[in-house]
Image (cartoon, rainbow, N blue to C red; front, side, top):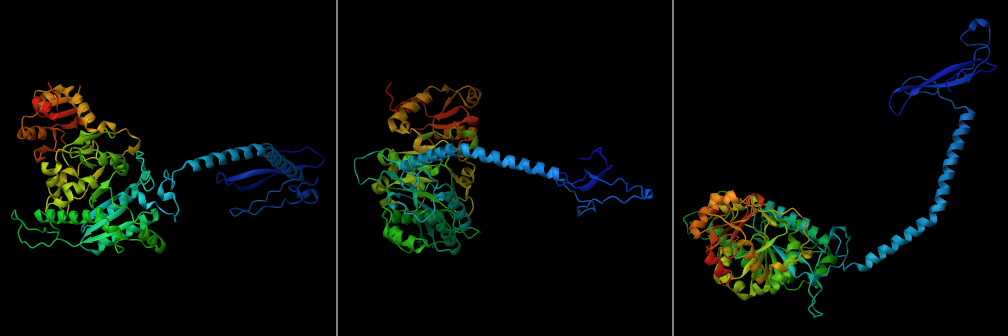
Length: 542
């Protein structure tokens, strides 16, 4: 095409102009046609005019229409026929192989399905299409969220709970030989919102998330606590009980919160909330009927949160994995997800857990055994967290806590935490790593094992003479720096940016008087009592 062809007749090269869809430009396509001996360009010769090439309409220009010759059409037809025949041939020789491969994949899938635990425990619940019957008997560790009148805070807290809820991920329990003991548990279910008062906007947030959890097969309860009446105009410290924003603050806020905690925990541990049909927020009639007839068991333990706390991605896995230790270790008071000294520059190991003499709160788990052993019956009028930290309640028992916090406290306005402490703990870093705690070996947390190992760690550290000397040495190894009393501790803690306060004589995060932080996230700095005091507390015979 596009070239002259020598023959009896003269040839004329005709360029057919058109529009290229590839480069969006005008292109010129050459084509040839046979003409008569009489050339059109020479009308004076008296010959007949050449036959005009029919043109293909063009939207952009009136260019001539392209016409395939019979030979070109035949070549294209044969080429397409060869391709179709070749594809059909390849398909025929591989059909048997594909059938065998499909059979193998089907067998593999059947084997996987047969190994799945009840309710497809390894799957994300959000991928399971309802209806299905959740195993309510395994929901022995509910999550309770205490809220009052900050609906935006509650929405943020519930969103993080919904986002990271495990649903069908259970923890395998040790074989007790008791057939009545379920082989799995589900930490974090049911969900219980305990509202102080009846503010409609707060209730609406709870109802919104109840519908979401209903889709996961998680029963959702909303309890309404009658607020503690405030009868004073001036609190015990001379301040007004209400702030400019209308929220309770100071002593009255702590008293109201403690009263709410007492009421809510009693209703949950007793199972009373499960038998209150008005508290069950379920919209689907069949689902509500199922949960009404199949109520969860009375809790073995309770996960406790507040409306201004977000959880980390592995929060429920952490609670799941430590539940057995909390149930069986008589030297444990609770499991907490928070580290008071967990600032970004002072932590580094996401997989490390510790024992502590200080109760942090802010996302914690309490067992039925501890609740019934004097805690529930003697709950205080106010400042319940400091009350738990007192030795009369703690009785030498420890709290499991992580090096990197699993909760984030964001509520510094409009509540009991609207103070200096609330602003400090807002800067604590939260874990971003999804750790499967059920697969971690936590035997090192056993009391005697942890105490022995921790003694070896702190005694292997280099001894610093003072704060400046500690800063010079910390780049090369772990450092231990002695404080002589709590007043001395405050001075040295402030120098390093460590939380300087104490409760009931115990510095925040301390284990047997030792406060540990990572300096710039690397080597450990131990602020510790004198050596003789350490040997006594660690029960080391010299």
